[in-house]
Image (cartoon, rainbow, N blue to C red; front, top):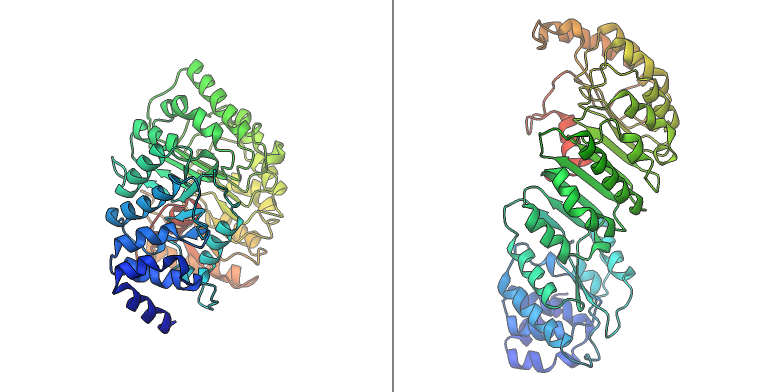
Length: 472
């Protein structure tokens, strides 16, 4: 390895010589020489190396931790020179320009060496590239990058590649497996979706947008995302829809779901247009979901009633109904759904749902049958000490639980609902004793227990960064 680095450094001292010998350079010298040229900013060498690149993938993103427009211009210029030629160089095999930040050992992997330090992520990315079909002379080059739109305007590298792809339309495809929009305007977001190759999108997250307007604008784009696995929508609108508009919106969204044959995860947060129409949406799902999250909404009796009916919800691994108004809804349908998914369910969030003692006891028999449950979050509900004891006797049978959260017993709260620690401590000790008679808990919390590192509830960490997929 050290000899390769020294050879590359020696060769780069004479830039003209380096360029002239690239055609005869051994394949295994390309990755270390490229890294050396990148580090020393020998842009002309990089431009020529791209034209002779002997591997299917150029994982530039693992070297370029922050956008470097100068280097990007030289790399793209090298590709443009090749695309303009009718006959491509003998050694050129480049199919994918990888702009995602994969493991640095990716370069060692492509050189043909084996290393024990390769991460699973790097191996996964390598497999993705190896699975790509070989491109012939007329096939487009693929540029892979993830898109996360947090600012009003696009990032420099995204803007750069968007312009290049539009200029080279047909010759280059911008492939984004993940597209997240937090705050970019509808107009700019539409421009992005027109540039990205729709088949490449597997994860789409849309935050804080007016979904009624969004649906009218983007139903066509959503329908083209045939490989979409995860869809997350969060509504930024706060106005009520008329009955006619609501029905039209539900019909448009249903037509989109009919085309998403590979959808596995559906997250709907603070979106109320489906209220009373959930049956129509679930009916349109083409394949079984692994994750269903309906949060910060107002489910009606008819909505909850439809959940156990459809095969598309019979294999759920994650279910999240947190912050929903279940206080005035009978929970027999939820019990039926839990019974249906008892063999597959791994994560259950029922946080702040308004579930009191009587409603809790409705679902306990079904809950105790969810033998593969690893995470159960139930804090924020109004529950008495007796009901919590009953709950723990049922969850005590779930040996796979690694994280469980429960509300502080009602008997430990003051008139404003705040926890009185002097009252909570002995009650918590009694609850733990009951649970330990059956099994030894791993991570368990009662009431508002915050993380010493970040100050958030442990379940908020899971809720925000794992189940929802939001960045840290």
